[in-house]
Length: 307
Image 1 (cartoon, rainbow, N blue to C red):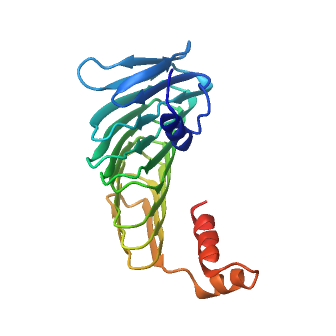
Image 2: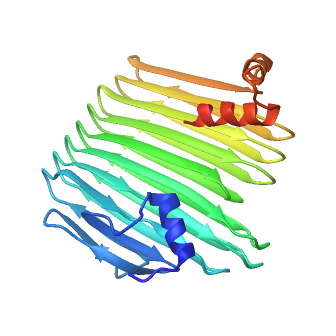
């Protein structure tokens, strides 16, 4: 796998990769797969009808991981990728994804991706997704990730999604359908600056008895950036659901939080919370008394909030 310094930097940012990873992996660079490995329990197959891959994890697979990062360093490249994950019953695996764009041209560079998860009965998955962009050109850096989740009876999915630098525009959509006894936890962290725009859209159908979901978004909007947080949880059976949006707003930024819960069953217990505000003055004062400048104090608070 021959990558230049920029491509290696992108891999470090989105997947914490400093070398070829252990286990199964597929590394996509500038529109094509450049490296791939499978294991006895995890297969990766190129789709024949559209761009993307199928990741097939055998039932009972334990303590294995899959890395599937995407990097773009070619100015003007636009792509749409479809990845499907079939996780067998009783599996317990970690999937590390993410996308990095380096754009030094004056054309838009864009990655749109749809990841569809079919999580088998009593399987457990941890899904980590990071988005990062940089470049000294005028071309926009755009990412539109879409995640579609189907949780079978007793399945568990924990999703960590992070975007803290460089993405000019993003629409992040996540939808989930949950069967009996399944659990979904999503933790999102976003920071925008300049004129960046970020939209998050969660939609969950809790169909199975005693399923549970917890959606938590933490974000910081700086300068003149704009953020929109949408969440809709439908409780269609006895279940528990929670949606939370916490945002720090700075400078002349704009943040909208629009949570919605719909109970279609008498034993559906649903909660939504939203809080948007500036950094508290006493927090700044306390840190500044310790010798930090106002800017340094702000950075400490922001970093702690998004940690």
